[in-house]
Image (tube, rainbow, N blue to C red; front, side, top):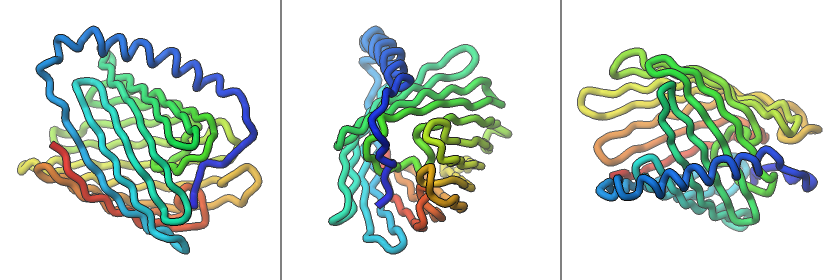
Amino acid sequence: MILSKIYPQRRTTLLTAMLSAVVAPCFAQFSSTSDNSAQAAWRFKLTPSYYQTSQQTGATDVNLRANHDKHALWAGQYDQRQTFHQTRIGYEYMHDTDWGQIVPSLQGASGGFLGGSLNAQWGQSTYLIAGVGRTNLRPYYNLNFDPNDAITLGMGARVTDVQQWAFWQTQDDRLHTGQQVKHLMWRYHMPSGERLTLDVARKKGRSDPTSAVVKGDSLSVTWDWTRYFVRLARDQKVNFSNSDQTRLSVGWHD
């Protein structure tokens, strides 16, 4: 079982600020544009996944995401037999600006977990990436596989009409674990409409401030075609544990 470390209760000042600063403007924008976007259709994406972790029983996850204009909602259920079960819901808003994009998100899960993030992108064909995330440190199975209480910095480029590259690092800046994950992503759009995405990552850090440092690599390959997609990932030292994990997702979107 790989869970966020349970630390003593403490104030989550930044998370509270993010909640108050992000939720009101987003829902105000949703209300003000609801009439104009009444004709816009909801779009759905269903992602069932199977996780096989070394020396553990297999786990399943089902996530349903719904997009409407600039808004996204999702609900998911993670289950590992006789070990851990968690239901989650979330909301994300994509705000376009003259200089780029701002994307705030909020997520809650059973067991009292609450988290939020704020990400930004500066630029168009070539762009900078920056983000910050905070949680209330309650138990949570981390499906991001990167630190949640962390900062993210990076850059990307749309090299051609059909190719996109991005490099970024997510690093713990709160829990003194030294966790950091470097990602290199390549995406290729084929003339037939299919899409191939490769995500290579390298991690280093501790599961908690007193444990030993672990190092590992991961590779994720995603193939999209028409209304379907498949993703296969192999992750060493998943979530900074001593276990390796293989993940398979086969999904549908409209």
